[in-house]
Image 1 (cartoon, rainbow, N blue to C red):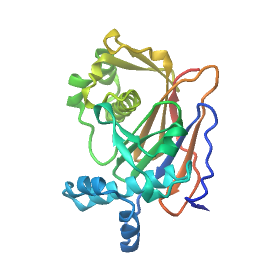
Image 2 (image 1 turned 135 degrees about the vertical axis):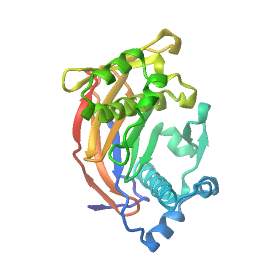
Image 3 (image 1 turned 90 degrees about the horizontal axis):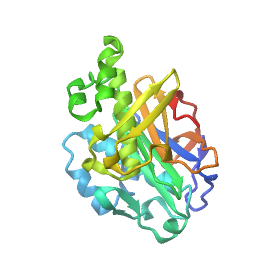
Image 4 (image 1 turned 90 degrees about the vertical axis):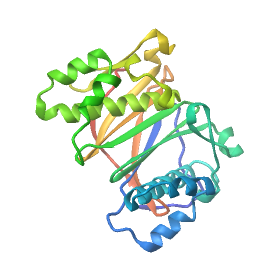
Length: 268
């Protein structure tokens, strides 16, 4: 695992590529590690951290935000604790540091039990969502109010043993898209639809009310572990071919190449 050096950023985004950084929080919460990660958070982050009731949720938040700050420091000469963020339209977090804004960095953060994920792009919006699929059965009743009619029909014809996984596959892709759009909780999730084509492809369609061109977005979905599913959405930049590059990262420690199991992606 390569060591991190925040003062000398070494990562470079090529064209419209998307870099995805995956962090797997340790089961044992080391006191020194907690202190080091806590030193990175801003007063605003600590306020949100204080609102969490359970120790597991508090550590997951701390780890995810330490990961975000460590990752961003790989792209710009800003120390992890020096990153500043502002809240954009619909609550979307954005970078406030002047240097990083000049480099047009965009990011998206998601975390769930046992996993934190950061996606980074340059001059292109991006969204990422991660879900733990083994901790509890999928809330299938949610589908009727938040999935498109096509998705609801597909969910009900999937064999019962696969239905929970299929729910999370839809859910992560939908969340990644609305994060990339910056729509937040204001989005009507039934106004766009995902269709799984063959074994490895996914197709996005969007209702006119959302004022968007589905072909302008690229989707990826993969399994970073047997317990998780992750989806990524980024704006296309034709005629370049977009690549998804994954690495495993331990905040403030180091990183290494990581090859998840690919599920599907948009054609082209």
